[in-house]
Amino acid sequence: MGKKINKLKKIRLHREGTNTLIWSFVVIAAVAILLWRGFDSYWPFWLFVAAFGTLYALVVNFFRCPVRYFPSEDTEGIVVAPADGKVVVIEEVDESEYFHDRRLMISIFMSPLNVHANWFPVDGTVKSVKHHSGNFHKAWLPKASEENEHADVLIETPEGQDVLCRQIAGAMARRIVTYAKAEEECYIDEHLGFIKFGSRVDVYLPLGSEVCVKMGQKTTGDQTVIAKLK
Image 1 (cartoon, one colour):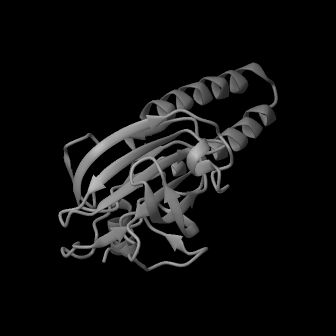
Image 2: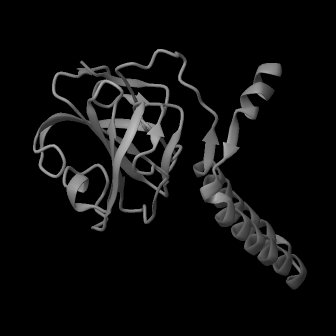
C-alpha cells in the first residue's frame, strides 16, 4: 500500500492541461445537472456520465506528467529519450538546415495514450529555437519530419557536440509548446516542451554515436538511454 501511495505522489497533471480540464469539467457537470433535472428517467443522465466520464478520464490520462529524474548523475555523452512512445526511425539522413551533412536520426512516436511532456535529451546550452509552420500528416510517416509543423531546438553539449531535437505535430496534434530559450543552459530532467494529442520527436545526432535502442522499442522520457555520443 505504501509503495502505491508513493507512486501516486510522483504523478501530477501538466500545466498545459489546466484550462482544458477545468472548462471540460464545468461543461460536463452543467449538462449532467440539466439531464438529471430535465427528464423523468435517469437513463439519459447515466448514459451521458458514462460516455463523457470515460472521455474525460482519457483526457486526464493524456495530461498526466510523472515526476522523473535520470537515475545517474553521470550524464556525459548520454542521450535520453525526449518523450514516451515507440522508436519508429533509426537511420542516417542528410540534414541541410543546420548541419549540412549526414546525421543519425532517432524518432519516437507518441500515441494519444502516452505522456506528452517532452524532456531535453542532453545537457548543454540551447543555441537556437525555431518554429516552422507546416502540414499535419500522420506523425509516423517519413515526410512528417520536414513537412509537418515542427519546432527545432538546437543544443550544444558541454563537449562541443551539436544535437537537434525536433518536436513534430501529427494528424491530431495542433499545438506545439516549447519552453527552451536560446542561450540558456539546459539539462536532462528538465522539460523541453509539450505537444498536444499525438505527435513525434526526432533527435539528430553526430554520426558515430552509439545507438542504444532498436526499432519498435518503447521508450520512457528522461529514463531510456537512446544513444551515447562518441
